[in-house]
Image (cartoon, rainbow, N blue to C red; front, side, top):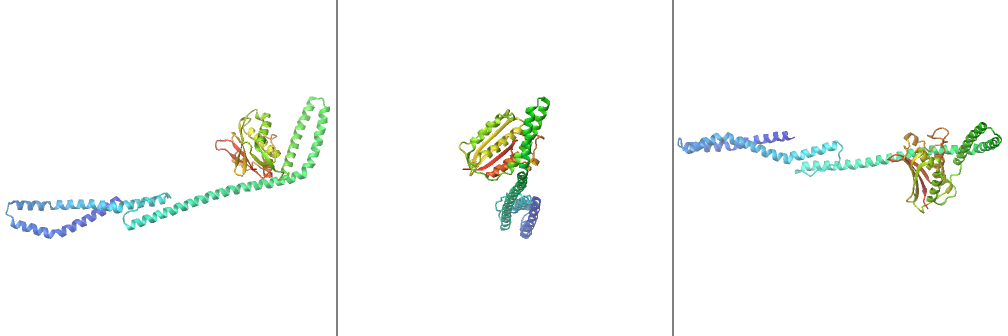
Length: 373
């Protein structure tokens, strides 16, 4: 750009100097000829005339240089700088850097071009912001749709399991009760330690089957019970006292951050069952050593109960199936995969919601949302 302006300035200077010479050539030469005729040989007038004639090329060259510099300065100020700023703006727009600002330049054409570019940048910036907002809305809608789809699939599975449980739990429960009774009689009449050990193992497994059947019955229970104001802090403290006596909490510290007097529309029994299950899961996620945090707070028209642990967190592939019945990451024989499914079903039965998420610093958080009183 600068070389082009310099070339144009030099061309204009050549043209200007040539016009000056053509304009002044005839009268200047006539004047010099008149002075030469009237001057005596060797006189000061003749010497001055000779010096003037010899300096004409230098004066013309100096005039050319001065005109070139002046033309370059004027063209660069009037055309070059505005064009460079306009070029920079166009390059920024080409890189989608829309936060551009430019003072208006002298000259109507460049001013109109720059105003048009500024308006275009502002319009593109507005459209970009709108596109980003729409993209965020689409992402949020997609996340909500995915979560709703997951919950719908889980709800369908829970309903299927509930119908199945309602049909077979009674038939399975009665034989199990009979088996447990006969095991008790056999244990009482047996005096051989090895036989009593076998009977204890059988009874343990039957008790496990009985627990699974009871869990299925919990899935098939009515969705809505008698809701009443429940003080969540008192229920939380009771649950913590119960779990602290278990072996899972021998090296686990439970920190309570409970808001006193906080009431929620719930059932004390199902609420206790949810909290006990979440606390036990948190202790097991820590491997029996660490810190669990139980907090309650009010958020608008809702009461939030959160159970947090500092464990490894929930893997992404596990998160999608976390509340599905019979899905578990525990070792065989140490979990049925019904605890979280039942807990979510109980939360929904109280008009609430149970969600899980990973914490930024590591660990997981389960949040129970209930309606406030």
